[in-house]
Amino acid sequence: MTGHERILDIYGSLSTKTGEMLNAARSSDWDRLIELEQDCGTLVDSLRRDDTAPGPGPEYMQRKATLIRKLLADDAEIRRFTEPWMAQLEVYLGSARQENRLQRAYGTSQAETA
Image (cartoon, rainbow, N blue to C red; front, side, top):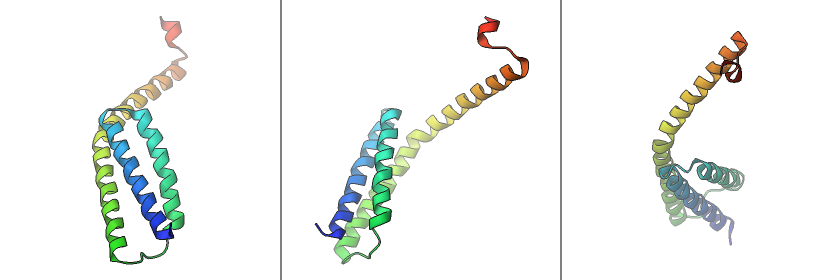
């Protein structure tokens, strides 16, 4: 396998992973989404390290562009599912932080007030 074939293989693996991420986001499987995101991070690190030379020709560049377009489309669709979840999580965490501040300020806890 040449270096350019390896690069396309990595892009292909990344494309598969983002498809799996999209499925996880659609089914609200946030733990799986996080696992897959970590896998993608490893693949992206490989690309940053190895994808430095220009492609050997137009077919290579076209294939690479097609894969990148799919990655971007998957990313946009994943964000459509995750942004509302993240907003909900921020509200929850903000409420929990506020509750902790109040407990520290007034020296009470849930156990003491029950």
